Length: 499
Image (cartoon, rainbow, N blue to C red; front, side, top):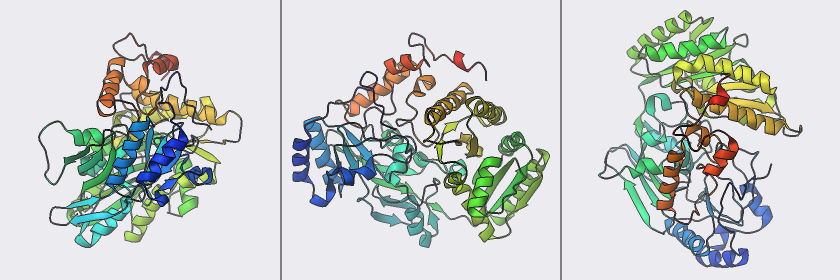
């Protein structure tokens, strides 16, 4: 697929003279930090949402904050668009190059600068891998709680850009809840230092604003994250259900009982079957859905809550509810869950991962609606998601080589996201909007709200050079998409009445 940027709906900065751009960048960067040949840039043409592709004019790989500032200065002077990129594991097209842009890769800025075990803080560069932070903190009895499924590869800078979550965000929060300080370079060349070692700072909460801003407001060059003490003990319970709806009800009942698990994950039959073939985790293949409920803390508290969870699952209709025998089996249960996405390759050539959020009470009916949509569009959907906080990750299975299937998968994904909004939820929980969900922003927000977002971006980036064409749609796009009446105070969901 091409990038599909539409000049009428996606106003992008005009591409500067490429030769002049390269000459200017070569003066401020070492040779190893500048990639100009097509074969070298090819690896940067997409992110984890591989269906969307585009080529930058040039790739830069700065090694420190001053080199980042120098790149931005050149781009500002020449009017070149800038797209920041971390590890390239994002799933919303956020790092997709726009025509004529400078792709600013942060992978060389990969040092853990400091770990303070007394203050429970780590200071890192944006290219540091998520898992590397926990590995470095473990000798001090600490870990970094947000753990996306891609934590082996994804970078902290990308996590901040998308406000990433993970299995344990139900109890420990998203990235925004675990970031205490940022160093950010603006398009004007200013270096902002937001937050720090204290829990709060005076003035507007720019730290929260920049977290999840998808590279539209500034480039993050340093991150201070909060570290959490390793729990005294951890246990996981696997519950199997003959009906998917029963599993959804059990999720609502567990949270309703006042139990906050460290993680509460759900997989339907299609997902657990693929994951079991991939990992051999010991999942029951006769189940329509399984729950993984992890509890951590003091052993006595865990034992009590596990029995309560077991009882709740059985009351909801579970055919099986058992606790992992030992740490090895606990790790195996989670390996199956975290390997569910790549496991889809066993049953389909391609998959399209959706990221929507719904109120937990709506989980059973939304799962039923997704099943109806799957039949309507003629594409299988495997459900793998963070059930505890209502963050859905339906995986739409398709074949990119079959004419029209990719477009049908996109349409199905859009329908699922707009269903989430109609049920009181959101189009994204942790993957960001990027390029993928820009149409669905029209269903999520009213015109006045979108204009406020655009005004905020202009305040940080007057020339519109940072990651243009992403996250914030134009009102013309919303009119064309048909998801918004631009003269109304609120969006219209008439097209979702069938749900």
